[in-house]
Amino acid sequence: MIPDAWDIELREGALTVARHLIETGCVRYDPHHLCRHGSGLVSPVHLEGRRLLSYPAARNEILDFAVRMIEQEVGGRELDAIAAGEGAGVPWATLIADRLDLPFVFVRKEAPEGEQEYKHRIEGRVEPGWRVLLVEQLAADGHRKARFAQPLKEAGCDVRDVFVLFQYGIFDEIHEHLAPLGITMHALATWWDVLEVVNRGHYLDGEAQGEIHAFLHDPKRWTAEHQEKRGRHKVA
Image 1 (tube, one colour):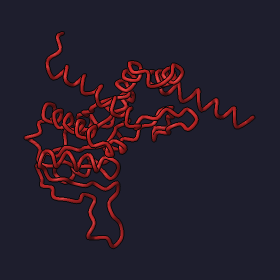
Image 2 (cartoon, rainbow, N blue to C red; image 1 turned 135 degrees about the vertical axis):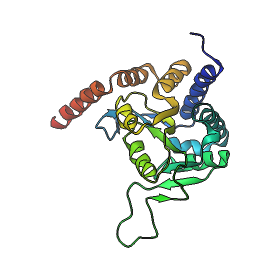
Image 3 (cartoon, one colour; image 1 turned 120 degrees about the horizontal axis):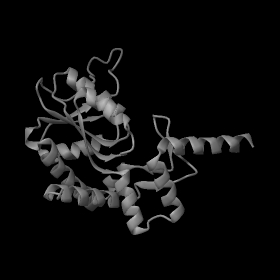
Image 4 (cartoon, helix red, strand yellow; image 1 turned 90 degrees about the vertical axis):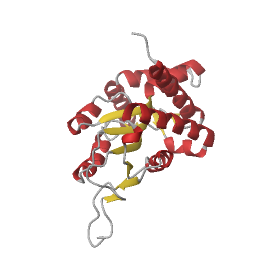
């Protein structure tokens, strides 16, 4: 099958995003301080997308690509608002809402309790029937995305897409969490794109590349082996 123009642009864009993540220091390999995921897995690589916000050139190029993907895969002109869950995705969602000239909506992790009647789970203007795009910084297993999409759906919003800068691309559970809600995930790049750029540019030595490769291909096995090693070390 011959790739069309968007497929080619999508691939080139993913590698560009991955390169920006690496060169701005968002990707950190640290086998001595493992990254712990909510699923219980651990990995030797960390990703901190907030650092990208400090680099205007990289930030703007990524935003250009983000808007292009939203227009191609989501239908930017059909959207009524951009939403973000409480956390690291807020600045990116705000910037994208500004680019698309759309309202921005903030979703809290939990509904406010007690006497905080002036606060709501959803802050901002939403109307029943509005098509809302949920924008986040990254996605692992999709559990958090489903958690933020649910109150929007309960408010009568049409939430059928989630857009993230970065998706791990290794957790099958993401489909289990989002498919029942009728939500499709869209991501600019994954760990596989980062690994390809690392391999091309020799950003890390062979040992580091091998460990990352081993984790991505079987994260459960990598976790089990390294937790066992840490356990033996503690006993000693």
